[in-house]
Length: 232
Image 1: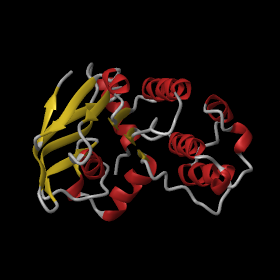
Image 2: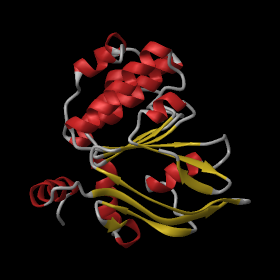
Image 3: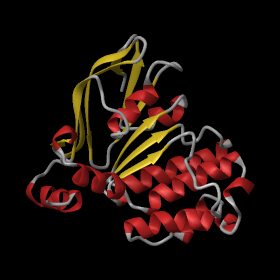
Image 4: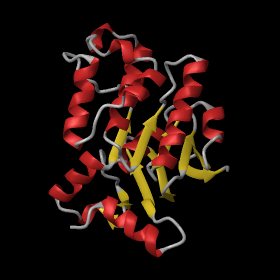
C-alpha cells in the first residue's frame, strides 16, 4: 500500500493543484434529533477550514466523523483519495497513527505521565523527535518534568497541541485550541498552526467559537439549521 506521504509527493510532482487530503460527501448524522444533513466539502494541502456555529449545533460531532472517531448515519469520508469505509482496519489504523492529528477540548493526556513522557510517547510511535523550540514558543519547555496533573488547563492545552504536532500529521483536527488561553498565547498558537500547514504541506479543520481565528482560515463554514453553509 502506498503511504499518504508518498501519494502526496507523487501528486505534487504530477499536478499543479494540491490533492484532496479529505473529502466529505453528503454526510448526515442523527442522535436523538437530526444534527446535520448533506454535508459536503474538500480539504486540500496547506488549506485551513474553520467550522463555526452555536453550541449544540453538531460541530464537534462532525469533527469526530471527519477524524474517523464516529461513523456517520449517511454519507462518506475519504482520506487521501480513498473512502475510509473501504479500508481494512490495519490500513486505517496506520493512517490514524501517522497522518491524523487530533486536538480536542478534553486533551486526552496521560495523567500519570510527565509532560516530557507524553511527548515521548508521540515521538516514539511516529518515529519523530521532540521539538524543544516548539515547546519554548508554547511556553511549556520549563514544564517538561512536571506531571500532567500539576499543569494548569492552559498548559495542558498547549501540551496537547505540542504532542499532536510532534508526530507531524498531514491533517489536523482541532477543537477550540485557544479556549483556555490568554490573547497573546492564543495568537502564538494560531501562528504556529498556520506555519505548520505551510511547512509540512498539511491541512487543518478547526472548530471554534473564536470568529477572529475562524476568519483567518482559508475557508469558513457555519453549521446552522442542520446545514453547513459557506460564509468565506
